[in-house]
Image 1 (spheres, rainbow, N blue to C red):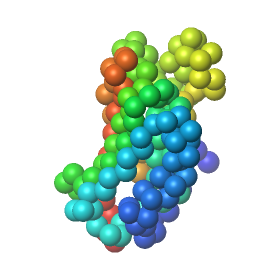
Image 2 (cartoon, rainbow, N blue to C red):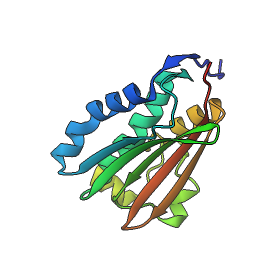
Image 3 (tube, rainbow, N blue to C red):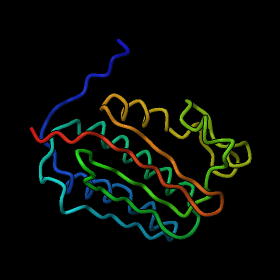
Length: 161
């Protein structure tokens, strides 16, 4: 049925972020990466939305960030910007070359063959991230510099009821 059914249930940004951190911190620790999570105090305690699909977005982006970062840090910020909740995942990883950015959200496409050998895996799961964010009325943006790192910013509308 192609159409994505989204839940509209109470969820706590604080609890979600803590769960994501608990889920992935051992991966980061194994690689000697710092893993920071920060939550904007202005975000409501309770929002309404699809926690499962929001978690898919976060875990996907954080998992990639950890996978493609050899040293330094990965951070997750949850912020309130206007009527949006912004989920920002930043890393000090390999970065994504300009020519790869336009198709990074395609299915089953990894940046280039050399990184495929280095990191294994097909596709970055970013097509899923984009599909889910779009279904939630949101956007996904990427800023990246090769050798410096990447920042993925997902903004979705805040529903407080």
